[in-house]
Amino acid sequence: MLQKLRNCFEPSDALFAVAITPYDLYSNGLNFVFGIAYPFKGCIVSYARLYSDNEELFLSRVRKEVTHEMGHVFGLSHCPNPKCVMHFSNSLYDTDYKGEKFCSNCKKKLYLSMKELGLI
Image 1 (tube, helix red, strand yellow):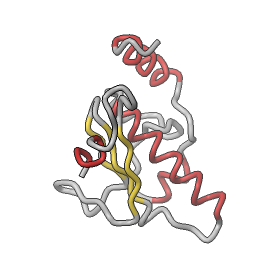
Image 2 (cartoon, rainbow, N blue to C red):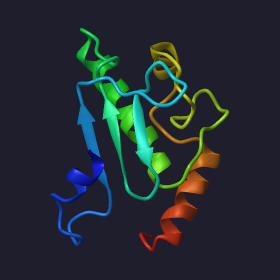
Image 3 (cartoon, helix red, strand yellow):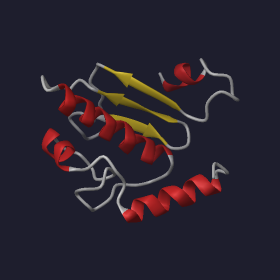
Image 4 (cartoon, rainbow, N blue to C red):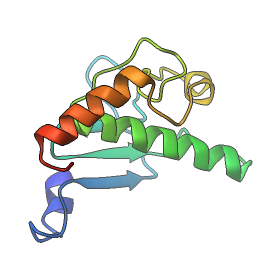
């Protein structure tokens, strides 16, 4: 699926692809996942389990999961800080609890990754 999305872009138009789907995603050993990242290629985020009647909450959840998966795209791993956007979300409670931003450690890792890729 990600490869099909990437084929829609000319190489000069995009570095990475991001797909957002209303369908559940699954990964080995897990009942479901909010997203799947392919390091240095792109990611897919599902909003199937992120939905809320509260539009602000719903959009915050989507932003968090897209940011989280893009962190993986740039090579970041899960963070032990429960307020960091890179903290693993096993449930909506985890997603709602964490922030929308990277902690200082993850910011440093992201900066180094972007520098190595020649983006900054």
